[in-house]
Image (cartoon, rainbow, N blue to C red; front, top):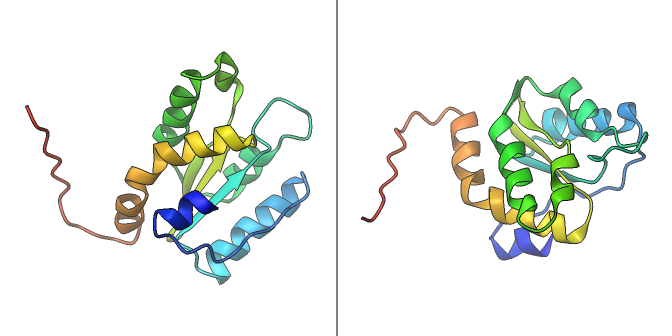
Length: 140
């Protein structure tokens, strides 16, 4: 959470949820639909263990998937460990909320946040209907 606060994000909610589809999907829907959070970032439950169900629970509640976020997180993780390819985290949109799954290890969470922080504000703006064209400039 320190990384988010250092990047000027306000952490409004935090919870430890049992590794059960109903529990995970319920909290994601509550925070999206009732609390109206712009962003929900989950950590853990993205691996291959039988109880790792976070991607499935997230998939049940999102309206649109954003495959590039999960792909980018895994790609960055591969720079540190080949095990990163085993992470199954997904990202998507529910209403006006961006929901992203990160792996559970502190190092993987930090790496994943480094990957997504540069695009989160833009993503949230677009999710909320911003029609401003995105023009990215590169120095040559």
